[in-house]
Image (cartoon, rainbow over the protein chains, first blue to last red):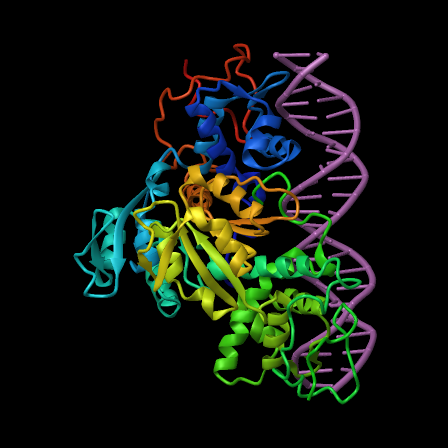
Length: 265
Length: 265
DNA sequence: AGGTGTGAACCGGTTCACAGCG
DNA sequence: CGCTGTGAACCGGTTCACACCT
């Protein structure tokens, strides 16, 4: 998901599909809400609705964990909360370090979402000496020089990178060398890590770009026969000339009709 | 990805697979970097390495866009940058609104990643009167009462939600009613939207939980036969009793041996 | 020779539909 | 009878391997 050798390929840990793992937190959240409202049991249908998936998928997902439901009744909320928490490893608590305490880093540090569910921010780290000692989210920011020591002393195995893109790989290397084996990367870069280290990335602008793609398609859906033109692509005039090579024939096509407004040169 | 009917199901816009769309921004970023270094052409192998995917996948992805490469040579960097930008709809610029200017919202507003690539923050909106008028990232925060007007006047079709979970659905409904058809949701809730509206979510704590899952497995890989025990699951003692129903037999199993330390009652 | 473009095999994941149990 | 649990069909996406072009 981020680098050459990143997400466990064959190692598909004891049979639970990756896609299922990714949904467990969703179920857990929905179940926690039910638990707080003291709802004793839920059907796959109800829980699925709350989690935003369909019930068949949910039942299949749970079937990988075991047979935790009661036929004709549904699932015991408390019991499931515990089973999923355990499966996700949230019955223990995970000390994490955050590197890069800028706007985003500070916001993340202030975000309560961690602490609530098994995660504990063990340290905030920044390379800027001016930041050292400053208090963010009630913790003193520590200097990057001490990164290795901090990780070692706190037994940290999960790191969050919220540095500028340019510093990310370097920080990542140090984290890994110090023993971190899971990284959540907010910097807009592809991180390269050795086998056995997991990286997940969260990228703002990528998400927006994906939305823009679909948005663009929506705009050009009814107007002309089938997308193209009508939209707002307007006149990009001469922006890029052409593949350099490729003779002068009105050669290859994009899956639509032909290369659109471009190639005026 | 977020609600009952969210991500275009059959509508798979003019043939480009969703998985490919999700990677285009990655390629674009890598290409932009090459472009800045004035590299004229790249092979699929090189570009794939820079984007963190394998070359077969990259070539297949590009083949959906058209035949933009030159056999025996590679791809023209500038040309590809333009083609991908156009495909993603980044040749036009997208006004977006951000709702919820707390820690996270402010951090996002300050994040440069938008502006650079076709996105323009048209307005920052918050429900707290105390925030109204305050300057964040060089813009005055506007009050939520004006949400509809702002969206309408700016022709906004993409909204970012960074409110607390409790307010998210309500804000979402208003955005949709006002004409927004793409939403990037940072609040930890499942948003319910009508058909035709896209929602993508970014959830910090879900990502961490997924990492924790894998991390847990790593720990219990060599010790005991196969995971379980050894890890740090330690003694959750009597935390949850049992499925309520289910007789007294040491009934069903989890895919491992048996239900672990739980069910002591 | 070198690297793209792509049919075909493969694989993980989703959906279907129903057997099985409470 | 109701709802879970799951085999089997199905489908999107990835990987392979090679034909084809420059």
